[in-house]
Length: 358
Image (spheres, rainbow, N blue to C red):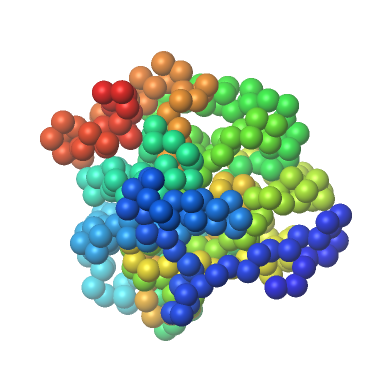
């Protein structure tokens, strides 16, 4: 790929390695200290993301896809999964953020989505890139892209965005804003879990924040879905300096910054779709510009979104941790999940119900 001009030092996106079937190179992690860990970490540091294979079993993928349909049908108020003629704009407008293929306008709390968040292999993947086992899991949503080959009007919006404010990131002298925002979270509304996702702090402090998703069906190039600008995590500070003119469009308090193609055509030219097999997790550095590309096939795209982060953090005060714990206990009860019987020891730790020392 040719270098991108108009930079003090021209940004050269690295070429992403793929296998013979066109899927992005992936790593199979049997544990957080297996032989492939060092290779997976090095890949993540170079490209700003990594694919970990076999994170969900085929049965788990199948059960989760069924749950996505359950959620969709609960939103639209009728059975639709077996009749694609019903997947119209009018009906789909009730499912969440339709233009982005997001199911649910805020965090989802079904039994299946909750139990998926305690998956041991998912924890291993995040622990590998974050360098610690002592993690908490966030509560996010599902993704579903309708097939568009026969219905092009059902395409989602191809987009690139950042789940952070890059100008705050390079200018703030400390994480005071991050600590203030996170300390205020009461977890009384589901949007608080989305706010929790999008506070990576500043470059001077240099925390690593990692987002992720699991593709629940084979996701080929033409199926659309997750794409990113490889290597952008190393370029974000220079990019933010060079694109200060965009700042006025968003303001200091924006944490979800969606960029039009006309504003950053070079980044859209550099972005690459990340094809993966069913059950694979894609983990990316939150500083990496990313988004999704519209479906152009006869197959739907299904995904579940995740974030894990270190439990030991200045923003995780005892008071906030207790509010968070109480909110999760309430959600588990509503989903008919017994924390002692249905959650694993790892799950209770990931949800913040027990310390890792227990």
